[in-house]
Amino acid sequence: MATLDVRPLPAGAVDLHDARRRRHWSVKLEPFSIGIVPVTEAKYAQVMGDDKSSAMSPVVDLSWLDAVRFCNAASIHDGLVPVYVMDEGNVTWQTEATGYRLPTEAEWEYACRAGMTGPHYGSLDRIAWAADDQVDEPQAVGLKQPNTFGLHNTLGNAWEWCWNLLDPARYGDYRVFRGGGFADKRWSVRASTRRGGASGMKHPDVGLRVARGLFHTGQTTQGWSAQADNKRGTVRGPLPSGWTPLGK
Image 1 (tube, rainbow, N blue to C red):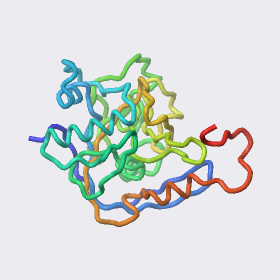
Image 2: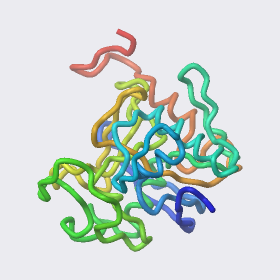
Image 3: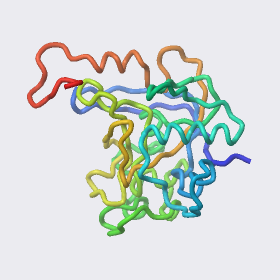
Image 4: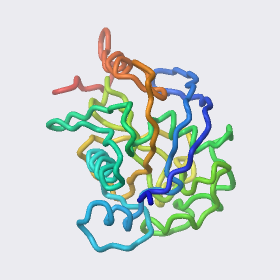
C-alpha cells in the first residue's frame, strides 16, 4: 500500500504569467498524479523516522532541499525509483523515474484551479484556512471543501514548494512556493500568487504536496526546462533599479 495518496489528473492546459517580465503563456500538460492533501506531520514522521508525531496538519518549516530529500525517501519507502539526484546541493530531476517529486509550477496551478479561471475554486472561507480564520498554526488537512479534482488545501493552510526557480535573474537559486498560508490575507491566497525562498531556507508556513509522473519529453517537461531557466537567469544590459548582481 502506498504511503502517500495521490490522485491521477488528466492531460490539460493551464495559463501562466510572469508579472516582472509581463509575460503570459499557456502550458500543455501530460497526465500526472498529485497528492490529495499536503504531506502531513504524521506521514513525514512515518517516512523519515525522526519523530513520533501523529498530527494530521501539514508538515511545515521544511526547506526546499528538505522537501526533495523527503520525496526521495518516500520513493524508496514505497519501492519506487527516486526522482532526484543530489550532489553537494545541486539537484537533478530524472524525468523518467517513477518516484515522488515536487510538482512543477504548471502542474501545481493546473491542479489547484481544477478547471476554474478565477483566483479561487470556491468561497475562500469554505476552501482555505487564511488570516480571516484567526488561527495561529496550520490546521488538520481535509477539513475544508476540496476542488473539483477532489484535492484539499491547495489554497491556504500551508504554502507548498514547487520544483521551479522563482526568478533566477534576480533571486538566484530561490525556489517557488504556491498556495498561501494560514496567516495570509485574502489577496495573497490565490491560485496565481507566486512566492519563493532560497533552497536551504525554512519557513513556518511552507510545506509540500507530492506529485508523480514519468516523462519522455526531451528538453521541456510539464512546463519546465533547464534551458529556459538558464535563459531567465541572464540579464542583458544595465540592471534594473534596486537590483544587486548575483553573487555580490
